[in-house]
Length: 143
Image: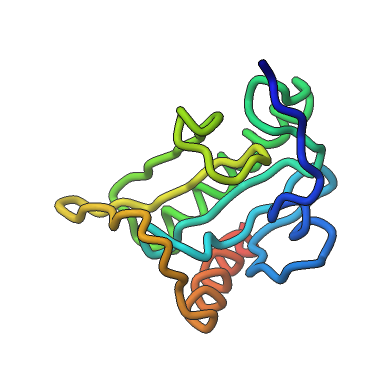
């Protein structure tokens, strides 16, 4: 059984400007912003603007745009945080670990020997998220 897309999910509200977010990148099809409960400094999310609950119900064109933005933003995150590598995650449905039911991709900068923090539900300080977003935007703007 497939559950319908809920247009009142938190990411849809961010897209409509009803909830603030520390935006990193935006184009006609996608939005990238800081995860408010980061598992690493620089933890960034990329979402399509088109409604999709997850990977399996996303339109192919939307999915292609989303992944192009993931690649672009991931390069900037890696540079901005001088990361040794990246972890890219995408969850589908509760059994798969998804908690917000709008397709989204996590970009986590990784440093050798440093474990990710758990998903504790603790929110980061807004000033820290703003600073991290600015670091990533600076790299994106530099090209």
